[in-house]
Length: 85
Image (cartoon, one colour):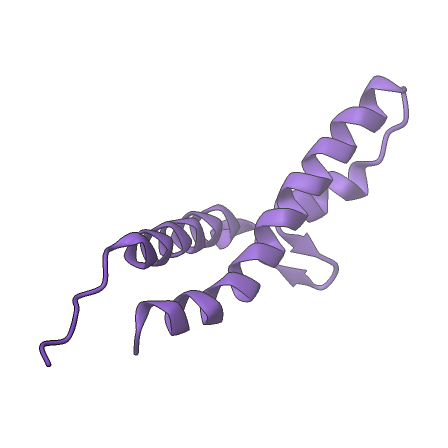
């Protein structure tokens, strides 16, 4: 599989939890400054999605997904080899 195909496959899968974590963390901090306790946002931020509890592996999962995105992105930057004709 080529780097571009791998990157296209990984981005939607990896971007969703990364964006969700960034959004919930920022929103929780903002609401806390306004004296609004939205503890449920903190649960989502740490990987607890109602009955689905990913808290033990959520940070590891986010780290692996981040590394995969970085590696596939760097692979796209590599210059292509010109084919000998």
